[in-house]
Length: 113
Ligand code: FES
Image 1 (tube, rainbow, N blue to C red):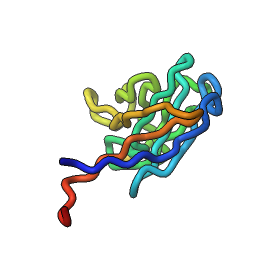
Image 2: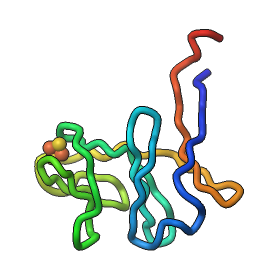
Image 3: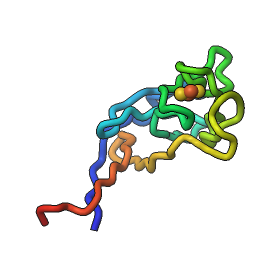
Image 4: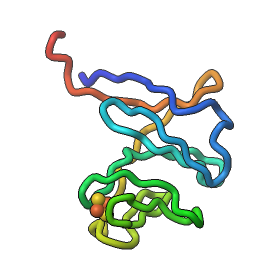
């Protein structure tokens, strides 16, 4: 049975509409986005060569900082540039409780169990 841990993403209401927040997600970085009041999150690793993405200046896409591929913030889907079509940023499962938004981090089976 996989192990699960929760990591804090943000306080409820902290990420404003159309804005992002970066957070630590195990050995990776996560990027959370307020999509019309719904918080979504992805592993911040481009599907081309693994570069980090950030919200574009006009706020309409996530743009990879390495080779400028664009991803749709609402779905994580590659929409422009060198990231292969049909790929998407890996989504992260979120949970809200006690005024906090948590990301669920799953580990493989515990080898010591
Ligand atoms: S690593 Fe993102 S476009 Fe190349």
